Amino acid sequence: MTRRVREPLLPLVESYFNDQLRRVRGASPHTVRAYGHALRLFFLFLAARTHRPISGLGFDDIVVDQVLAFLDDIEVTRGNRATTRNCRLAAIRGFVEHLLRHDVSRAEQYRRILAVRAKRAVLRAVEYLEPEHVRVLLDQPDRRRPAGQRDHALLLFLYNTGARISEALGVTADDLHLAPPRHVRIRGKGSKERLCPLWTETATALSRLVCSSDVSSGPVFRSAAGRPLSRDGAAYLLSKYVALAAKTLPALRRRRISPHVLRHSCAVALLQSGVDLTVIRDYLGHASVATTGRYIATNVEMKREVLQAFWRRAGLAPRSDRGWRPAPGLITFLSSL
Image 1 (tube, rainbow, N blue to C red):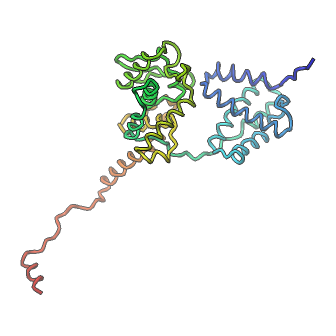
Image 2 (cartoon, rainbow, N blue to C red; image 1 turned 180 degrees about the vertical axis):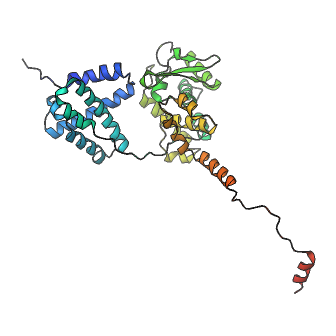
Image 3 (cartoon, rainbow, N blue to C red; image 1 turned 90 degrees about the horizontal axis):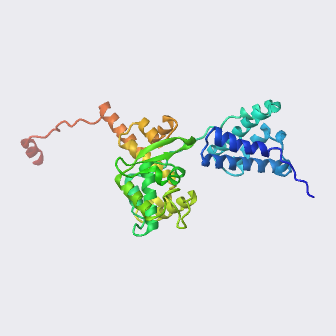
């Protein structure tokens, strides 16, 4: 009879994800997946470094030197940016904090890991689409077909609400209120809920979608097979319509448009319309107004308006004084020379 090898880390890994992340912190499924992926990469790295199977890894293998080596490998070998490195570190730190609560005997070992700082990352300009580009994109789905109606409703919903793709794909028929005042209940990060108003066009598109398919329970947006639409499926649909829109707008061919870009596009459009930052923060479900403030630094049109106002206030524009005009007699005299 083969004796089963006991994995020392497995019970605490399971309790970290099932109890700490899901029940205590109320982490979203996306966060759970991201943390799971980060720890999987870390354990595979440890196994390769120690020349042991993952089942043979123990608490003494989780030390600061190994963590630092893993973070360096992420950037050097895998070519990830500092932002990805910091996300991996956040996952490891969360797990180490969980270890510390259950294994005080190695407190100093864990404290050294928790002291590792995130690397300063360069904040890139937010990618977004101007409203006229979004209009072209929304014209691409063939709304004469059920799939086209679904795709148009999804794209319009993402732009209208600024919802994260995971939030949009989790919306059910019970979350929709399609009669005036039209709105949707969106469940965001940390199980937070917010109500978002809907345009009449969005409500009409969603109503058509709900009535034409059996979505009385479960997510509204579904695949052709009737299963909930996946994140990858939504990204594929968007890329298909971006490619079609690029025939009219060739500049789109050089841009990487993900579902999150529609969220950014919604935020910038709200900002351009003069909506206050705190309102946009609540509209998008941001935890801090500082996150919302990034869109100010991104929008070139708003910067141009500020620059023009500054120019007018500075009084540097050339005066429109009436220029000198010679008398007719002078011109006659000079012409006779």
